[in-house]
Image (cartoon, rainbow, N blue to C red):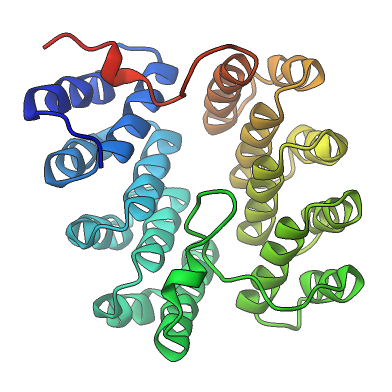
Length: 303
């Protein structure tokens, strides 16, 4: 946790909550708060859930989960319960509860694992499986050692055979938790063959599953995934939750091709896709710059 004072946190929170500021600045402020951590940072993030941007609110929930601070649990439960929130926001709140991993949330996750919104229900089922896996394996430290510095919704398997992992990944008769475990194993193997296997996942299963595939391909930042991500982004019949994650993955890969693709969708009919392209283009610029870090708002605020 970074050592900063309350006035600095409040100033960063002001950037996050200022709807007149460019969305890319607000995203950078959010990730700065995530890196700072603590009660006041959590409160500043909480204040922003009244925003109109589903993309921003979903990212708020994601960051609260990645912070793994139990003080965020009541906020996340509140968002999960709020049926006026967009499905992608509620889904992210459920995933964040699983990322924090406190068994106190098991009853609420059980309740919403039967939610009428499929993405929410599946997310809560996954979060439950993650917490139960943590309890039964007593292995939380190993689970959190992702090579990509993320708290993943499922641990990788011990399987190393790519063909077998691909079979599990694409088999819709296997539990989502086990398919996610195969997904993260393929990510960690990180070869052209494993990336192509992951890319096949963009063509099957639920919106939740496909959006996580896109997220993982973004973490890998390999050009071989670009045509597959572009195909899902350009498919206007695809769930916006998937298309948005494909846009952000392209932003992470950050080649000139990615830049050109993203610029095509800045006027997309779906707000969350348009906004994701804005954020992704900012990420492209960051990846191709000499900036030390993306979450750089602390150095810019005046207190």
